[in-house]
Every structure is written in C-alpha cells, then in structure tokens.
Image (tube, rainbow over all chains, first blue to last red; front, side, top):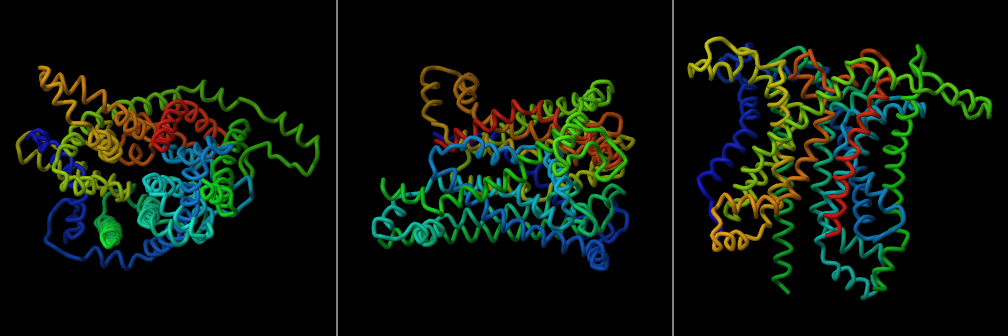
Length: 268
Length: 304
C-alpha cells in the first residue's frame, strides 16, 4: 500500500524548488531594465538587443552550434555502434577493456580528459582549433549515447528481429528496417544529449581549442570571471530556452513513437 | 540460434565493434599513455614545452637518449611542495562532504518521488532531469547572481531581519558546497529513485505485520535494499566532484585550491605541462578504485 506522507510531499517540493528556482531567478532578471543586476527596474528586452550587437558572442555561438551538431552526429553513430557491440556480441575478447573505455569517460574528471586529449593532439602535430574540439567532444559524448541506446537495447524484444531473419531478411536490412526504427527514440535522445553536453562543455574545449575557435561557454566564462552582467543573464536565458524546446520536442517524439507502437499492437 | 550467429559475425557487426573501439583507443587510451610519458619529462622553453621529445626516425640512439631523459622529477616536485598535497586533500574533503550532503538531501527527495502516484512520477523524473540538461556553467552562474553581496539571498535575509549587514557568501567553502550540491543533485536522486521505485512494498507490510515500527522497517528493510542506488549515486557524484574545476573557480575563495584548479593553473598560467601531467596521473591513481567500482556496477546492471 503506497502512502504519500506530508514529509514525502514536502521533501519532493523543496528538492524541486531548489533545482529550479535559481534558473527561474536568472531568467526573470534577464528581462530587468536596470543596469544594476540586483535592482529591479521593470521589464525590458534591452539586454537581448545589446547581445545581438555583440560580434564576439555571436561568433562563439556559431562555432559552438557547429561543433555541437557535427560532434553529436558522429557520436550518435559511434555510440549506437558501441551499444550494439556491447549488447549483441556476447563475451568477445577485449570486451572488458571496451566496456571500460565506454564507462570511464562518463565519470572521468574533465580536466584529465581535456589535458590528455590536448597532449595527444600536440604529440601528433595536429593544429588545434575547430577540428580538435569536435573530435574531443565526439569522444566524450559517444559514451553517453552508448549508455542511453544500450538501455533501450537491453529491454528490446529480439523475437521481431529473429522473425525477420527467419523470413529471409538479410542482417543489414533487418537492422535498418526492424532494429533501427525500434531503437530510434533512444538514438534521438542520445543525439540531443550529445548536443547539449557539447554546448555545455567548458573545460575540455578550453584545453583542446586553438586560435579562432572560441566556444560559447568559453566566451561566457571569460565574461563571468569579470562579474555578473545583464547580457550574460540574457544569453543564458536563450540557452535555457533552446534546451527546453529540444527536450519537449524529444518528449513529444518519444510519446508519439510509444503511442504508435501501442496502436500497432492493438491493431493486431 | 542460427539467426543470432549470422547477426553477430557479419561484417556489419564487426564494423559496429571496430569503429568505436578504434576511436576510443585513439582518443581515450593513447592520450593517457602520452600523459604518463610527459609526466616523466622536463619542462622546457620550446615548442612543445617539454623535453625530451621522441624522434623514432633517428634510430636506436635517439630512442635510448629519449629514455635516458625521462625521470621522476615532477613527482618529487608534487611531494616536496605542500600546495599539491593540500589541493588533493581539499578535493577529497569537498567530494566526501558534498557526497554526504547530497545523500542526505537526495534520499528523501527520491523516496518521496518513488511513493508519488504513478502518473505523477514521469513528470517528477522529467523535472529532476531538466536542470541536468541546462548548462553547468549557467547553473553555477545563477548562484553568483544569488550569492553576491547585494544579491537576492542577502536581500531576503535582511528583509526577514535575520542579518543586518550583507554576508560575503561568495569566495568561500559554503559557496562551493552550495554550487556542488546544486549541480550534482540530479546525479544522486535518479539512481536512488531507480532502486526505490522498484522496491517491493509488501516487504514493508510484512515488517509492519511483524510489529516493526516504521523507522525500524526503514533502516532494516528500505535502506539495505537501496544500497545499490546509494553506491551508484555516491560514485557518480564523488568521482567528478574530486576533479571539479568550474565550481570552485567561480564560487570558491583563493586560499585553498582544489586539485582541478591547481592542474589548470600549472597548465595555463605556469605553462608547466609535465607537472600538470603528473598531477593528472596522481589524481587518476587516487580515483582508480572508485572508478573501477563504478565500472563493475555498470557492467552488472547491463548484464541483468
């Protein structure tokens, strides 16, 4: 018998308030007309206009979006492959070391990942910049994609694949027409997670970047070190809004996919 | 069974394994070996800023000279100067204390979520994950807004009459703890919720039927059953917090640095790449045990 006591309700409410209030305050203050960050001077879009004129911020945003899109696309392919290998290949030789390389980056302190990647690029004589940051982000985010897709594959009904192959469907085609559509919600979620992790990363990008490839978090960080500014509140609000839209889109897609699956099953 | 074999030995399966395997070997494993090598080198005013550099093309004598140039000097530096030991200790202290606080805050939240009506649970999980998708940097920055001397917290406290002069929250350990607990709370709540949600409620009923008071049933039934979640949450928080850079850098004071900041300073300000590498190697050695445990848990959960 489940009971929701007053203590349970209060702890959940306080926990959620703690998680969301600081961001809500930040969003509200981004519409503050006053230059003083702490004095409320009425509603205004002034700081968004200031932001639009900030050339460096705009360039950083473009670089970040490009790096995030390319690295997330590569990470989705590599991560999905890794998830398939981990769940489907049984106990192959080297499985331990493979799994270790998938899980370790998830918790590895970013300073270590960033430093080691940079030293590798220097040793290999690669010019640092856009490409090295993209490769670094691919490495980190493919592991997150692998974990997300893997959890979907673990709860996956293999009899559908087996039925397709028993009916003479070749493995590659079975994968494309049966497996992939079924794991698509997880793959999309993995891609969106990879985008948001890449857009978010400061430490690894700072290590692996070179001249001409300043990402948005690096730009924001250098501004924040100089103190709180209303423009920073505005750019942060835009980022929060972009991520929120992406999440609701993902939730909508996966709900429709689930509804479709349910309808398909009901039709049988 | 035959079909399954066809799927796992086809070229597609081999490609699915080798592409990520090669990528991670090149971008995760090899870089570590290079870090170890550079931690044995000496800093130099050159490009790249360390000696010796290996030139395989120059033959055996070059390789011998290269090996002779390696040494443990950087590790001696780490021992001889207190600042490094203090940084490591500070990091471990912050990680341990914050993990304990996170557990104390996260457990009741996860417990309440697991007991909420099923329809509501999906929404609650979404609300806990949502901040995780919001940039780390933005979340830390949000607290600078609140904690600064004329910020919201001091204004609210002053309005309530609790304080009379503004409190300097920023640049203190308190600010670091607030930032860390805030940023890592979802990492603690979600694994806890995952085990608590699956818990068999009839066990608690059985305990109650046998006359156990509720607090006793909680300590002797619920807590032991949720140990896997406690372990996963604690590791998921403890390991990255130890190497944290952004939070202590933006919210903390400058008197004691966490090891992530020390590494950053050695690398970016002092341009001493070999010492920075040695710091990374020692940090990794400190974290090997918790990382190995974490990996073990992950593998087990996949096999289940």
